Image 1 (cartoon, rainbow, N blue to C red):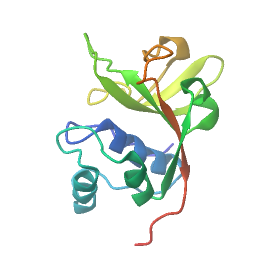
Image 2: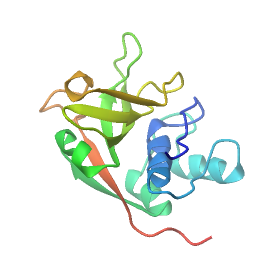
Image 3: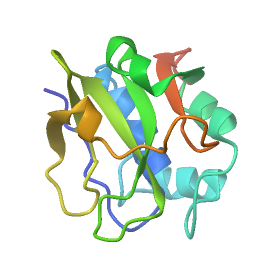
Length: 150
């Protein structure tokens, strides 16, 4: 099992999803507390908000994003899905990484960010996503493009 990163309050959920996708594929990734992470947070412009330039940030990590329907996420792991924040009264969007699932269940990394559990399995129908037709109902398959050279 990859050593996934539990999201902290130091940057955006999208950045954690990208780094955990690298770990899903068996590669290392930047991690909180080192210079590489700090440079990535600055490049992504997400120290105090959401990642800007999803595609450019993913490409800088050797990843490629492909827009998919949320219902395709389990079949296209790893995939990032937009969900409503899991905190009580959560009306903000949050990105969680889908790493698998079967028989109507989905395995998510960082669904309950900052508190855990790190990996959680639930019925796909219980994942609080924006309703069909809502512009925020989005998902991306994350594939390896090419790893940047060090």
